[in-house]
Structures are given as structure tokens and as C-alpha cells.
Image 1 (cartoon, rainbow, N blue to C red):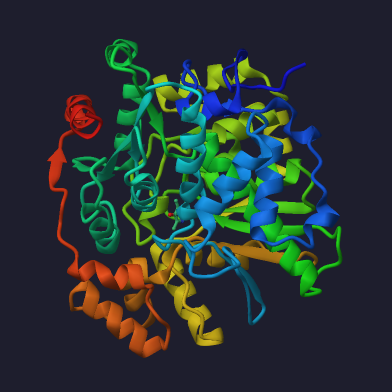
Image 2 (image 1 turned 30 degrees about the vertical axis):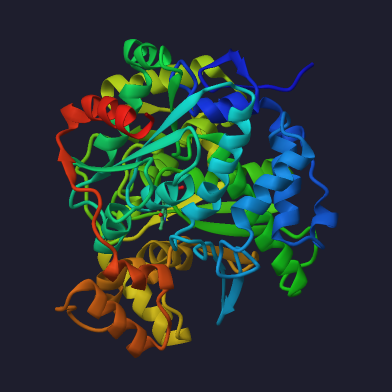
Length: 494
Ligand SMILES: *Cc1c(COP(=O)(O)O)cnc(C)c1O
């Protein structure tokens, strides 16, 4: 039988990877999944001798089965060659007693670059089979996706991109990164609401059939750069294998030995990529899902009840300020033995009541692989200080949440890899205040002070922001998103 992806809400809704990448979300609102992912067994032993790009070739070819080897190779090359400040792409640092996989060496200094350098490449190849097809990428961001997506899609032919971010809901550096974005096909809009409002607004537009039909006349369709798109999710699988290889290489583990991964989590994309790696044969003992004060995932993983009806907290780790973790739907799909009806009902409940509860059998299955914890802003700040004073290593606030949680739940039997998702310099004020005292200067002065006091270097792309002109100034209400998309689509995809 031909291999296909299908919707988490309807197994009959089937589609090839290229089409799934173009579309982003399934027509029924579900996410695209590949049923037989656990039957793929990657050549793990061989992969221990590969570099990052070779591993990417293996992983992507296995999951994107309608891409030719050459197409994948070209995408990997274009996405990564010369774009990261290290040949390794995601270097693993052995710091004191900790193993840290640094995912933030890409052009925008957050782990989102790993997926979002690749997605535009995959999308371009996928679009080749469609004459005159234009795509408008709509993306809600809690801070890091926006910039990484803008940078990735800048000036890509026949593609426009509009990013919505929560006004006052991202760090100053994140905001400057986005509103100074260049390119004739890029749009950046602040909305008066939080990340969930932005994400729900975008999903509503995807699900608005009449609206979509109107643009279809002009050969334009809407797609997503969020981790609901398999073209962004799949590249993230690679660094789990890479981290494992480095552990073997450094003789921290024997080949075949199981390890833990601790992942700062928001939309559940990063840790889900780890779960995919495990399904494809990576020896993982468990994943530690780390949350901040918005601990909806912690509650779910401990009780089986997902309830988004709760206060939204603004924290010093803004990219994890999320109450609706979209990718959890994919885990529910696999954990329920691919019961699309069941998943569809849960999502219906989430939509109508803001909550759902999973069956005990499913919860236990999930708990056998996923541990969890969360850290308040105070605990997160304390973690930044502790790690710095002990080993001279500066954590960003998101990674610090995970560090705090790792220290709570880590066992002594398994090596645990801390997934580090951003450069601390994206969050200068929060980090500076955790380490020293009140930061009473502007963000760029604090950046310099942080460099001087810690003897570390800020990434060049962040330092350079100071000189860049502001290009995007729109601020709109949530109710205005649709009209805004219509206007941006005309403007950017002429
Ligand atoms: C996006 C982001 C996260 C959360 O990742 P998910 O894939 O949404 O779970 C964590 N840390 C940083 C720095 C991020 O940008």
C-alpha cells in the first residue's frame, strides 16, 4: 500500500507529505500524522558515524517519502550550510555534571531555526509540482517562531508570510527582531491579546472555508509555519539522534543504552520530535516535560485532565506562555492507538469547554514515557544563578525552567540531556536580573553589561538589531485578524 499521512481526526483523510507541507493543517482541523512511524527503523549504528547533515538526510528521507534523495539533499544543504555559527548545527556541551544540547546556533538564536530553516526549502520543492500556486504563511508566535519563520521565508518565491505576536507578550529583543524584518513578502502584526488568542485567530482563519475559497480563486492558499506543520516538526527529530551520537562518542553511554531528555515545553513540538525519534528506534528512557507557571501540561501529565480555563501568566520565559499545546494532539493520537474518533472528540471538547480528560489507560501509557515538572519565575531565576555560579554557564530563562525541573526529577541511573532552546541574549533583562541586580538601562546596554560581567559573547545578529530600521508597526484587535490577512495577502503576494 502507498504510504500516506492522515489527519489525527480522520484516518480516511489521506495525503502525501508534499501536500501536507503545503497545507499545514488538515481540512478537518486535525494535524497530519504518519501511522507507521513506529515501523521505521533507522540505521542507528551507522548514524553514530554521521555528521548532522548526513543524519538529517536519513531522517528526512524516511519521513518525507515523496521527496527524492536529491531533493532532500538540496534542502538540507540550503537549510543548514553556512547558516549556523557552528558546523555541528546543534553542539552538545558537557558543562560540569550536565549535558546540554545547544539548539540555538541558527540565524535567530533560538531552536526554532532548526525547523524553520528547513520548512521553506521543503515548501519550495513541494510547490514545484503545482503551477502558479501561491502560499500565504500565517503564523502565531510566542516570540521565537515569528522571527525564525520570517527569516526563513524572506523573499522565497510565490510565498508570503504574516506573523502575529502578542503585543507586550514577547521580550524586547524578540520584538525588535521581528519589527525590523526585511523582505518584500513579510508582514508583522502585533495583536491586543496573548499567544493563545493569536493562535486561535490563525486557526479560525484556516478553518474558514468561505474565506479560503475566495483566495483559492487567485491560486492562493494559506499554510502554517507553526510546529503543526510536519515540514517544521520533522527536522527537529534529527537533533535527538545527534545528541545521542555525541554521548556515545564521548563515552558517556554505551551504544544502545537508554537516555533521558529534559525539554522546555510550550506547544509540545520540540518534545514530540523527541517522541518521534524514540518511535523510530532511538533508545530513550523518558522525556521530562518542563513547563513554567503556565503549567497546563504539568497538570495534564499528572492528572489526565487538560484544562485551559485558568489565568494566563506572563513569565520571564515568554515563548512557553501557552495554554493550548497544539502538538499534544499528535501524542494523544499515538497513545490512543490511532483512534481518530477519540482524538476528534477530545478536541471538540477542548474547543467547546476548554477542557477534556483522557482515559486512565491512555494516561498511564503516556506517563510511562513522560515525566513532568514546572518552575516559577523565582525558581527559574534561581536556576540561572545556580548554574552560572557553579559552572560559569549562562542559561536562557526557558532552558533554566527545564534545568530547575531536571534537578527535581532526574534519576541517577540515566544520563539526562538538557535541551537548550535559546540564547540567553534574547532575554537580556531577565537573565541579567537573575544573575546580578536590577537592570536599569536599555536592552542593548544590558546586553553589553551581560557580556562584560559573564565573559560570554552575544550573537552578532542580536547586537546588530540596534542599528536596524523599524519596518512593521501594525497593532490590531483580535477581531481584525481576518481583514488584516486579506489585506496582507493582496499586498505581499501581488
Ligand atoms: C518555542 C520555544 C519553546 C517551546 O517549544 P515547543 O516546541 O513549543 O514546546 C521553548 N523555549 C524556547 C526558547 C522557544 O522559543
